Image (cartoon, rainbow, N blue to C red; front, side, top):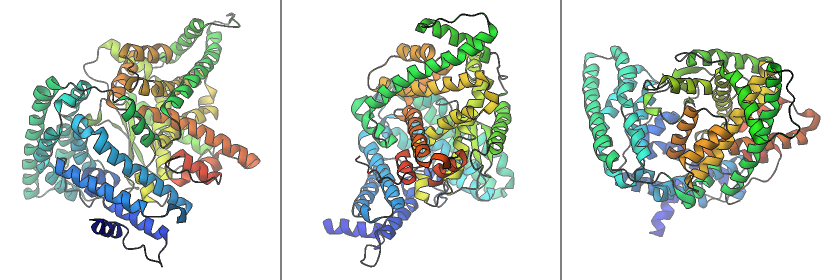
Length: 589
């Protein structure tokens, strides 16, 4: 058995472990094989990153497929462990650590976290992405992509049957079942709005085949919907709280940061007070313009600060977008932010298109907006800044609550975060880095932390002429990231209740009820992700401070930003090591 295993390792390394070959070559060969194997881990996810070798395949999600993936992960970990990382270049050392973290995280998630057994949203997202990923971008001729759509739709009954067999209803949390019930019809929506309108390019035979596949898939989705509503939902009895042991391990894998859960909470609670005090100082200037004879107390209590901040925020809440006009507003503000970045020489502006779209139905219910960048292997394709429409069943009060939260200033902050100079700009520049592995395995804290940093940096540089209302809303968004980090672990580890979380978000974080209610749902559906914003932002702030001190008079924003974004999207600790010539941190550090 040992001999067979050594042969497998040799194959993964490509037999490059000869005396004449370097460890760098061996690692690059291993990394290349891993990228080439992504379609064996998940054909759908391979499509999304731009590997189109398995566009005609839909994931197998049964026990045999999981066993095969586990074997593959184990073999890659063994092959990576067989290499002497100290003999590699600094760039490859970083990529090796990133790959190790991903492999061990995936293996742990399969064996211990086991979302495949209790999270129906995993299967809903895969089924929707399977078709969406083929039709959203023009990476190949449309007739070729539609032929692959037909093939995947033909496999949908098998996929959904495997999903139902994998899920253990008694382990499924009710909130996950409820969300799956809402999202599952999204596949039919993709077919109706993104597939059928394109069918005119097909031959008669191609159209006939696709129509048959569509009917087959729609029946399978309808059957799955019935099962979700009548079997899964009534029997769902799992706890959405994953607990301290699972949370801490997942957090370590997700953040790849030396900060522990308790350290993150302690730092977040300290920043919570700091940012609220900063909001009070800005709010005073706004309030004073409205009431010029106000005498502010020298030592105000928290209740007084709360009143002044809320009064100032009301001025921003008067600037509301139309209910159906958020996308149009975002488009105008994206251009405005782009012009500011160029005019003020803040960072290189990539020539990569971004389109603002309505969020696909199968992805709604978790976040208000997200950036969907082209895959790491489809770098010239369009990025999508997706915005969720307001639910049609909301009352007028709920709509007004949402629009107050996403007032014109907030949409501006959101657009800086998702678009420019946030996610869109950062990912477009970072993906120029030659390592495909690093692009595929981008760090969430680096990416989210940069976007939060970008919001604050733009305000500091005078965006919107130092408008105090924009500054106040920007601080409110910073406070949102802080409360995200607090509730993330408090909910999953400490048992924080909905009332306690809502109070912290609404009273402490000044969020509107609709925003806080949505975040409560999101916190239940995810774990460890809500901490990435705060941790990544803290790391970016500390990195800029350290580099600014090291560079002295040679520091400029353009030089700094371009260099930070030139290394791809690795964990911030690796960028720090490269920019300040520090030792490369190891995973066990």
